[in-house]
Length: 99
Image 1: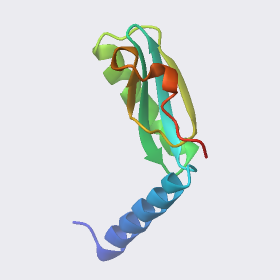
Image 2: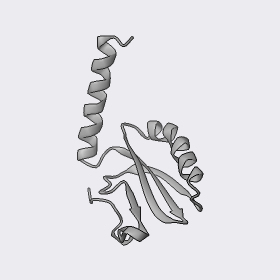
Image 3: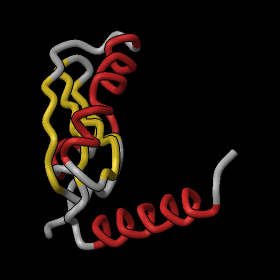
Image 4: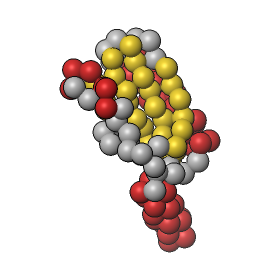
């Protein structure tokens, strides 16, 4: 059972992540694939370490979907779209807002 302090802690963390994300300072896992040509964003995370810890699960999911040629990075950004795909006509746009 969750105690009130854990719930408050979680709410404060979520608020901080939302604030960081608003300013483009939250951490995201970016996965680029060559087949299909896509960029996937997973996050936001409070720290690079949290993003690193979650990275393997996202990579596994994308590999299970049959994607090939994965390139994974973790960085601060502010994605416009969580999936940027060539067939959606958005790949050339970069999928990020300038921060």
